[in-house]
Every structure is written in structure tokens, then in C-alpha cells.
Image 1: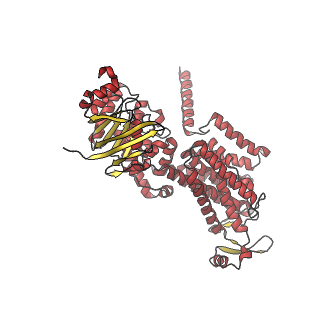
Image 2: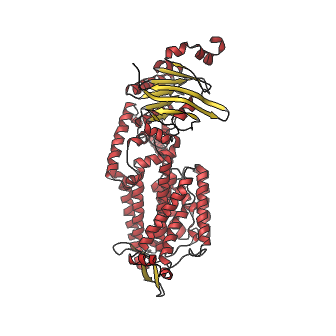
Image 3: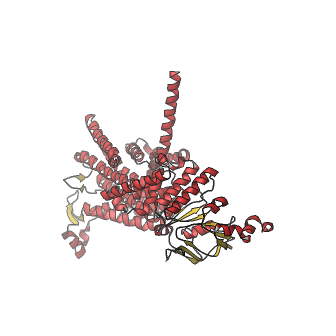
Length: 359
Length: 257
């Protein structure tokens, strides 16, 4: 019975494979690029779905964590440390393999961090940022928390715009590929498109397994009870502040991982990644505490957006979606209780008609 | 036979601005009994409950539970020490099923930490099954099993109250605080409630109850504390309290005393 909860993941796995084969057969494999990028954005959405939908804590600054992850990784793997090569610390990092020598596009020798080390540092760094921000603000409720996290996003954007090492208003480009294991590499090279598609969806599936484990556990119930009634949760011995903080950190780490992978996949990262509102809009359309609704909406909307379907109205579309949601379905469009209600209504109608026919 | 003191409230005070909601109140709760706190509106009963369960800060005085001071502890720590409560207006987790509500009550009786929950370690699954079983047993006892998979918000009000009881008991408390459990219940539901409260007492749990329904209070309590305008008016057995002229005065007015 306990294994039942993983069935939807198996279904997703099949869909991922079928999709790839379908695109290969129809000769439209170029769509894989957007599907890969959409997968990484979906990881941010999954983390945010946990935080907003299940724990009931809104964050309007999650792109900040995405940026911390992506930018840390981009800087560490592109910044040439050879100017510090006389420093014993840098030499030490070089000997233990944290810093590697590599060639850039023009054949110049560079001393940069290895992508794996950069990845670990990036995730660590954003987790620390989440702790530093989370400890003071996670006690806040409702729109106070929303405003505080909004402030965090604004700060990160301002830091990026004002720092030359981070490229200021320009993106950091020529980020190298990220070699995983078994010769898999996260990079934008066209021949690696298919393995990269599977890598991205593999990471999504890992994120989903983590979420499903959490939701169906003691900790997940604690989160949902906080959402339900924080006073009552406290009266049952649930350390609500700590659980909220843990979820905040977990979702920040999800965003950071997505940031790192997408940066390596695109080979670049720029200040345009600050799209917190978009993620919140997707979670709202996905039905808040509906993991699969969020995944579905994230893939569909992000794919359309990346294909340029919304044209120059891109941000407007997501803003409009959020406004429409708050007006007409504040509990989320694909909200599970709502869906259940609709199903019952439809079943009732069918039964009514069936009766009429037989009479 | 002298009974063991479970809860000792000593010179407790709390003011809201100039209003002394609880003013230098001291009393004890013996282990294994049903003790009621009564008093007219604004006597400070709910404030007193909020002080005991840590939701309000204490101005002065102390609360000793099982010989340990719990004054100033966070609510979740007080719950962990063995005091849980139900609320004047039910505070169920509306978007969770009845079973999940009760399982959330099992929180302090289970161990699985955040990381092992994420990883889905086998021992968390084992514990999960144990908690599910314990919660189902509780629901069975409260005759709520057929509501187990229903969202809490869809239950009739009287049943919601019972679910809240089950949830509070799932935490395995030694002291249960009931804040006006009969409020909004009809006469039959109140009778049913009285039976439940007595059966909880029989299972060895001490109960402190705030209630306006006097017939219920007089029926089930072993000991009654009367508050008036934040002060302790008197305390004693139901019979003693009923005869006390002060109590008659605060409830019915000067001319009846």
C-alpha cells in the first residue's frame, strides 16, 4: 500500500520517454531544448509548491535562491583564478582538485573551480542564505512574510546589477559544461541534447520522490497542520517555526539546484532570471497543494513561454494569470478539493440524465 | 487519602493594559480527577488556559507541572511535557482528513526527523504504520471510523468537536485542557460528551475544564474552582460550591444571595 504513492512517478517516467520518442519520430527533436529548460524551472516550482501549497508560507523571492545557485556556479567556473596563482590557498585548492586548469573557447588557459565543487558550494551557499533570511522572517505571517521575501528578491537583483564580477546588467557567458558521472554532461552541445533531456527529468523525478516522501510522513503532516491552524499545531507539540524553516531551506535548495543545472545547460546566466512572481503564478494555477497540478502547469506554461508563444507579453501573461487566480480561484485552479467538488457535480449530472433517459 | 498534585498554579497574574484578566490566582490540580473552572463571562478562564498552555506570556507567578516549572515555555514544549488542549471554537486542520488530523496529534509520540522523512527511510514507514494504527484505534473508540477519509471541514459540528478530542488524546497527554467543550452542542451531544469525558478520566488522564453548562460541570467534576473578575472566588466540591453564597451572588446577583 505504501508503494502506491510512487505510481504517478512511474507514469511520469513513461511520459518522458514516450515524449522523446515521439519528438524523434516526428523530427521535432529541437523541442527537447525547451522541455529540458522547463524541467529545471519545474524543480523550482516543486519546491515552492511544498512551501506555499503544503506549509502555507508564501515566498515572493524564490528567484533569489535560483540566482544565488546559478550565479555562484557561473562565477566559480568562469572566473580565472590564475591571477591569484601565487596564493598558497589557491595552489592548495589546485592540488586537491577543487580548482582545475582548463582551456576557454579561444585556447586561453584558465584556473577555475571544477563544476562539481562549484555545484556543492552553490547549493551550500544558497542554503546558508535561506537560513540567514529564514530565521528572522519565517515567523511572519501572511502578507508580512510575502513582503519580507519580496524584499529579499529585490536585494539579490540589486546586488547582481551592481557587481561587475556577476556581470552587472549583462549575463555571464561561456559557462562550461557540468560533467556528472558515466560521462554524462550538462551542457548546451547539440549532440548531448537527448542525454540532457533525460538528466533534467531525472532531477525532477528525484525532487518529486523527495516531495512525496515528505508529504506522506510525520514531517509533511506537521507542515500541513501548520497551514491548517498554526495555534492548534503548536498545541500538539509541533515546533512550527522549525518546520517552516526546514521547508524554506529545502525549497531554496531546490531552486539553487535548478539554478546551477540550468546555468550549465544554457552556458550562461543573466539578471533576467529574477522571475519570482512567475513561479508563484504557476503554483497558484497548479492548485497550491497539488504537486502534480503544479508540475503539469509548470511544464505547459514554461514550455509555451520558452517557445515564445506569448511574445513580448510574456511577463504580462504570468502577471495576468496571478491576478485572475487571486480574483476567481484564490485556493488555486487545480485545487484538489475543488476538483473533487467538480467531479461530484459532473457525476450527479450524468446520473440525472441517465435517469431521464430510462424514464 | 492525599492525592498527588499534577499542576500547581501559584500567584499567577496577567494584565491586558489596565485590565487584570488573571489576578494573583493560585490553585492546584490533583492527579486523576476532573477539575472545572467556572465563573461569569470575563472572569479570566480562557486567559488562564492560554497562560497554562503557553499561548500567552505570564506577567508574574509560576506554573508547576509534575514538579517542573513550565512558566514561559513555548506552547510546543508545554505540549511535549504532557499538556494538550481543545479549543473554544474548534481548530481542526480543515483540509486534512479526519485520520490525518488524529495522526498529526501523534506528532510528539513519534520520532522521525525531517531528513529521514525526506529520504523515506524504512523506519519512518514502520513508525507511520504504527501511528496510523494507533489513530484508527482512537477513531474506533470515538465511533468516528466511517469519517476517517472525510475532510474535517465536511463533518457536522458535533463530530468535529469529537475529532478535536481524539486529536488531543492522540498526543498522549497527562493533563487535558478542555475549553468550553459543550458550547454549541445540543442536549444529546452534551450527554454523549459527558460520557466521553468520564471515560477519558477513567483511562487515567487528568482533565481541567472550562464550561458554562452548569449541569454538565456539576455532573462530572470532582473539584471546582470559581473565578470572578480575574480573582479566585472559592474552590471545593460541586456541592460546596453550589451552596457558597458568593458563587450564587456572582452568578445570580445580590438579591439571591
